[in-house]
Image 1 (cartoon, rainbow, N blue to C red):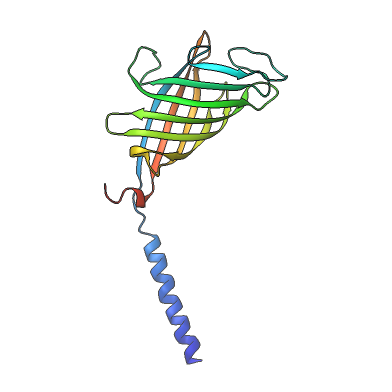
Image 2 (image 1 turned 135 degrees about the horizontal axis):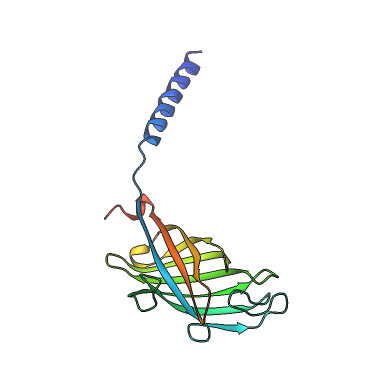
Length: 179
């Protein structure tokens, strides 16, 4: 009986200690900003494999199975002549028969005032609606970064289409201990 009471006492002390420690959350380093991706058909973005069916090619659709590659400038405003602070390089494969959705993989290289490096994203893209893409890695100042980016169409008319890319980045505590 005395042994079980002692075990119970030690267990309670450990539990209270863990709960007490759990309530002291460390503030995560975070960065939130938006840039604009400018994609010009047959200049910064190309269809490299034609799809097999479904929707036809338009400003917002490509046939099912279409493989598209891009290397698009990222600017600080929706105006293409504004300052370029990054490049989005990647590929997407049309994954819906209506031609509006794709699976996308991209590396976004950034040269911001206080941060430089790249952010890698992957996920589903909707051509005419906002879509969230998880961040799966980073380099340079973005090493160990976590979070997501939201891609939203701004202008889908004309040869160049524009997307607003909102970054929601977080560094885990172990990645910022020296900063």
